[in-house]
Amino acid sequence: MGRKRANRIYSMFHYEEEIKKSKCLMEGCNMFIKGNHAGNLLRHFNAQHELKYDEIVKLNNEDKENVPPSGSENAATVMQYCTELITVHGRPLSIVEDEAFEKILRLIPGLTQRDVNSINVKNVKENIKQQSHDVRFEITKQLNNKLVALKVDVASVKLRRFLGLNVQYISDGQIHLKNLSVLELHDRNTAQYLKENVVLILSRYGITPNQIFTITTDNGANMIRMVNELNDSAIQDSENEVEVTVGDESDDIVELQVQDEDSDMRKIIGIRCAAHCLQLAVKDACKDIEDFFEKCRKIVRKLRTPNMSLKLKEKNLPQAVLDTQTRWDSTADMLENLQKLKPFCMENMTMEENIWGQIDGYLDILLPCRILSKRLQTEQLTCGDFYLAWMRCHHQLSLVDDAFARQLESCMDERQAVLFVNEHFLAAIYLDPRVNFALNTNQATEARKFLTDIYMRIVKLKQHQGQSQPVPGTSETSEADTRASDSFEDYLRHQFAGNERINVQFTLENELIYKLVSFLQEPALPPNSNILEYWSLKKVSHPYLYNMAMVVLATPPTSVSVERLFSSLKFVLNNLRMRLNDSIIEDIMLIRNNNLYSK
Image (cartoon, rainbow, N blue to C red; front, side, top):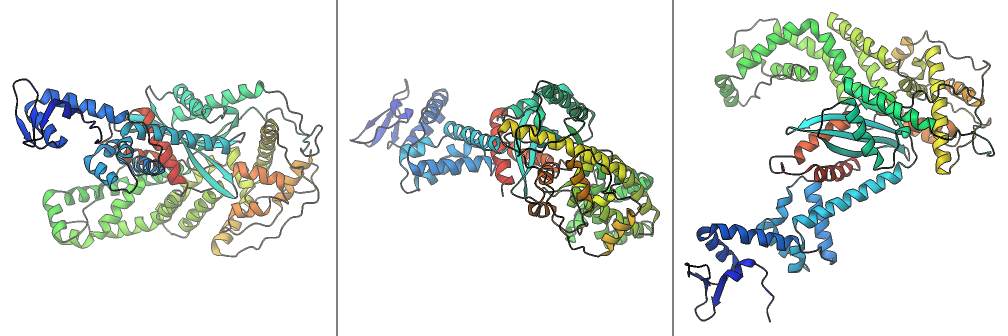
C-alpha cells in the first residue's frame, strides 16, 4: 500500500488508471490532465480556478506547518543549520518553504519525507525562540550578582525605532561583550520610556538597577536623563537593602573603616562615548576651515554630474564621493578621494592652483585623528587604552607646525577636561600603571574614594551571593616592571611632570586606602603593555585591587558596538523581511549578535 498523499489538490481530481489521466471534479470543468503529478494539477487550478487554488495552497501550508518537529538526529541537525541560516546569515524565513530548498533537503541521506515536512517556518520560529531563550539563560548565569557596564543607543531602521543594549565585563583575563536586546520601541524616545525598557530588558537577566555600574551613551539629553532616572532607582533599591557590616564574623571579608555617607549617592555613572567626543572636538576645530570644505564640495558636485561621471568611468577612475557634513571623517574621505582624482580634475576642470596643497596639508593634519577614530572602533578597549590612543594623537599633532593643528589640540584639550571630571574615568586611569601618572593629587584622591565605594558594592553583591572577598594583607609586594623608552613615552612624562606623587607616609584612615596609595608608587608600565595581562598576574598578590580593576577596566569608553547592532539590523530587517514582528526580530538579533561577539 502506498504512502497517503497529503496534498489537498488530489481531492479535486479523479485519476483514471486506464488512460493515465486525472479528471477535474470542479463543476462545469471536467478537463483531463495528463498524469497525476501534484504540480501539474495545481497549475491547472491556478489557471482555471484561481479562487479555489488560493484556498488549496493555504490549506496545504497549514498542513505543512502543523507537522511537529521530527525526533530524528538528522532532522535536528538540519533544523539547527536552518536556524543559523535565518539568524546568523540573514536569510528570510520563507527560504525553508522554497521548492528548490525542499529538493535540497531530500538529497540529504537519512532524511525522511516527514523530516523534510517538519522543516517549516513554524518549527524554525519555535527553534529560534528556544535558542534565544538558551542564550539569555547562559548570559544570566554569567552576570549573576555582578556589577555590569552597559552600552545603550537608539536608532531608526526602515521607519521603525529600536533600542540597542549591550553589556561588557571581564572574565578570565579578557573583556567579554554580550548583546542583551535589540528591542523595538512603540512610543516617543523620552527618558522615562527608555528607562522603563532598559529595566524591562535587564529584568529578563535578573539584573537590578543597583547592579548597573556605568552606562555608556551618546550625549543626547534624553539619554542623560535616562541615566539619572536609573540612578534614582538604584539609590532607592539601596535604601531598601539591609545594611551590610563588612568584615564582621568573617576573616575573609576586608573590614573597612570608611566614612560611607556618600558612597550610595551615585550608583550609576554616565560615560560619554569617546568616539563622540573625538567627533565633537574635530568638528569644532574644522569650523574655521568650513569655507575651504565647501569649495571642495562644489568640485565634487561637478564631478558627480552625468557627463563627468561617464568620463571617470571611461578612464576606470573612482567616482567622486560627497561627504556627510555632520561627520568629519566623511569629509576627510571626500578630500582623500578628491586627491586621487587630481590629474583628472587638472585636465578637465578649471581650479585654484593652491587647492591641492591645502588638501594635502589638511589630510596630513587629520591623519592622527583618523587613526584615533579607527582605534576607537576596537571592541576590547579600556579607558586606559583610549587615553593612550588619545594622547598619542595629541603628541603627533604637537609635532606639526600649523595653525590648524594647534586648533585641533586646543579642541581636544577642552574635551579631555570633561573626561577628567568623571570619577569613573579617574578610577580606571588610577588602576592603569601605563597612564596613572597623569593624575594630579586631587584627582588621585577622588579616584581612591570612588574605588573604595566600588569595593563596598562588590562586597555587598558577593555577600548576597554567599561568597567572600579577600582581605588586603600586609605581605603584598610590589613588582618592578620594565619601562620602555620611546619618544611617545617621553612626551607623556614631560606632559605630566608637574603632577605631585602622593606621599605614602601620609596618615590614612584605613588599610585599603593605604594599599591604593602604595599601588600608585609602583613603576609605570610601557604604553604598549597589556593591562589585562598585568592584572591577571596581580590576582594573587593584589586580590582586592584585582577585583576593583575587573569592574572599572570593563567599562567601555565608546558605544561603537551598539551602533554596529543597528548596521546588523539593516541586514536582518531588509526588504524581504519587512513583516517580521518585534519579538522574532529581537530573538534573531540576540542569536546573531552574540554569535558574532563570541568569534
